[in-house]
Length: 254
Image 1: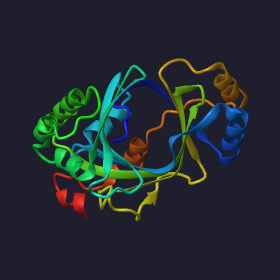
Image 2: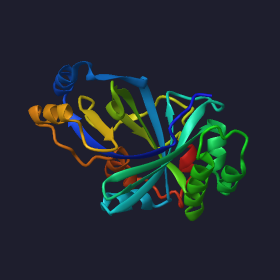
Image 3: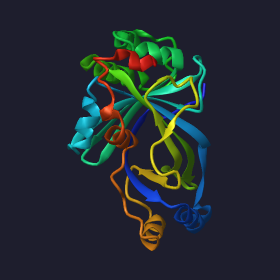
Image 4: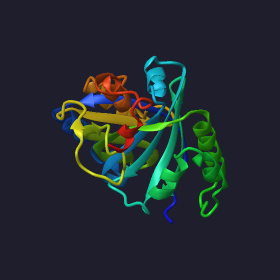
């Protein structure tokens, strides 16, 4: 089994780029950046929330602490293919992420009512150090709320790391799209554009300070961080106008 990172603590800064600025950024970065292990991929994230979207509504109020839960795949998985079950927290600008890799069918079981008990007790394969603790953290989060799959957000991503510093990761997301039906990572197609398809979302992820060369490029291109959340934008523009899941829980399977 391929090893993966289960615990993250880092800063994540986002920037919106035009295609021309994107090309200029890569040209100026030169050979400092190399493709990461995923390279080019389609990232699919299924966000879970309460019936009245309490998690994302709270997040949009910009509190000191916020959290969200999602199921993520790279490409369209089969039910026995691995996906990531992720708990993401942010406190005073620092992102803390916990994730475990599970076959999709097992991840779906963990997210069913009462599935948190199975998530903790299942020890069929725990190859990564600390995975049992991560499972307990996610299970505790699941036990606090009744959560529903609320939206599937996809994008086409190109990801790089700094050649001599793999802790620096830079991703570029294009064609960000969403849907609030057929909420299943194993089903493809049928999504709607979330934003201008010409815009590219760049995200810089690093545990500490930006290297000087990167600061110089950002300065030359007059690039400044923006407050941006794919799920948050989708909620503000579309989801808050949809029926409440408590009123119409069949939305999860429509």
